[in-house]
Image (cartoon, rainbow, N blue to C red; front, side):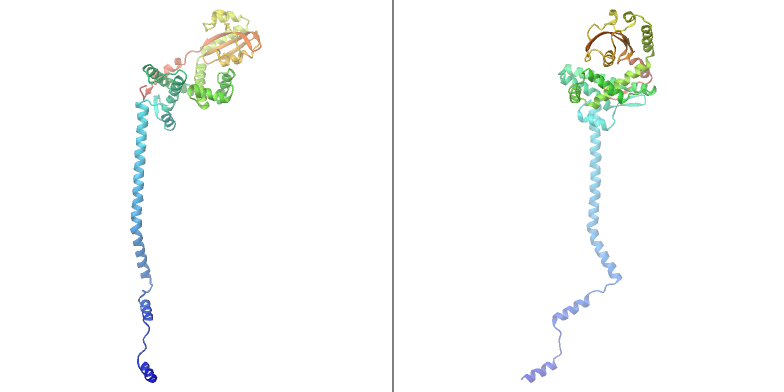
Length: 355
């Protein structure tokens, strides 16, 4: 039996297992890698990728366009709001003031120079702060509204006049240094007008005017510039004061010269006598006068002392510790309007608000 089975196996042809046949068939079906097939597969891959990239790029472009459109719309809306707030409603809020510090909206034009809304708001806001906090004015009442309207007109007139003063200062090469501002502040503080310490000084400015120290320096610098412009241009007043000083230096009686030439109606007839004891903290006299008086000895007279409103010649009669009695001869400066009016006639201001 075994012998027959062996014979049969020898006669049947050998067949490979099905797994081997399948593997061989799969290998034979693998495409050959050539330059053409690589290029073809690359295009297939890139084509599939484009289906995702192109829509994404298109979406990003739409997002950019929409974002830009929203930004432009918001910017236009912001500018429209600011313009309406400034020019139609005369808004003086802190937000609008901060905006005006960044964007130079004009409030008026003087010659070729623009006057900024920021300078106008700076001026009107300290009026409002003082009268609201110190005088308890209700600007919502009828009388308060009338006062506010008057303040607006005064503030606008003030910043326009400041523009003319700056033109005059530029023409005559007049400037105010930071050192001059520091000196003036020190004089004021010696009279205890601005507090005895830096902290009190800052509190006084904030409480009364809503100012920072820098705000106060800015206001003081503009005042000093106007004073220097008047002083430089009012040659007549300087000449009158110098003539009287020359007479004093020749020995002419101080009281007699005061009666004859002084322009202070309160002291003129008394030979220039102030009529009261003066102490270093006296607030009735200018800081410049106090500073010079306490450097003089009894019987001495000063040279010409320049003050915010005029020129003075001072004489100390008596001195008792920190108290003195003194006299003065006073000469009024011409008002700043004397020099502004010719400019105003030739360069009419153009205002952009109706206060």
